[in-house]
Structures are given as C-alpha cells and as structure tokens.
Amino acid sequence: MTTLTIELPEPLTQQARGYGISQQQLQELMVGFIQNFLGIYQQRSNSSSSIATDTAISADIATDLIQLEFLDDADLWQAAQTQLISAETAQMQTLLDKQQLAGLTHEEQAITQTLSQRYQRTMLIRAKAAALLHQRGLDITKLRQRKTKP
Image (cartoon, rainbow, N blue to C red; front, top):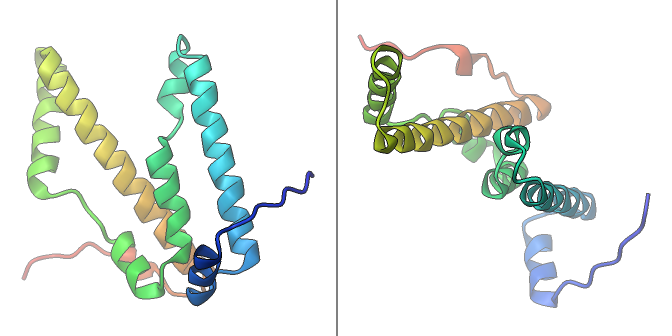
C-alpha cells in the first residue's frame, strides 16, 4: 500500500469534521474516487471494447453510492425506498414489449437506454442504502414488503 498525503483547505476540513466524517471515511472516499476515475480512464482507453462500457458504472452513480455512507439513517431509509415514477416504469414496459414484437426506432432505443440507466441507478442506490442500514444494525425486512393499496 502506498501512503498519499492530501492537503485540504481548512474550510473543507472544518466542514468534514462538523459532519462527523472520520479520517477513515475520507480515506475510503478518496480510494473510491480514484478507483472510479481510473475505471473511467480505462473505459476511455478501451472505447472499442463494449464489455468495459456495458459493465462499468458511471462516475456520477459511483459518487452517489459513496456519498450514501455519509447520510443519516432517516435519509438512508428514504434512499432505500426510492422508485422510478410509475409513468417511467409503464413507458419502459411498453418499449420492452414493443422491442420483442417489432423492434424499436433509434429514438425509442435512446429512450429505453435512458430509462434503463435510471432504473440501474435507482436499484444500485436502493441496494447500497439497504446494505448500509443493515450494517448499522437496523432491521431492513420492511424494505422487502410491498405496499398495497387498501
């Protein structure tokens, strides 16, 4: 392991301390940031490889996932219950059905890709938030229960 010293501006240091962010948490954040940056750099270098593009998560999603660690329990519960709006879910289902039956236009393919990325982001955030809640010793079984309308 290599040691790297980073000088932070004093206001940033005070803000981190004010939020109760430990030195260990800052170290994990920086390691995650560097890993994500290197993944993006590698992705750009290997742009001809569709596997690297398809399996890597974007830097903004990776950053969102790392930032979840700094949320309080109430905000994590909210993140763990995030869902796509029903109109997006219905539109995605319609496009997937059409894709199987007749194929999609380029515009519809782009919409499907955008909705798929939103869905992936939502699911990753929900999963990470649930994992963090569980790590904090909270009972997450309520997250598995579907809300039903009376």
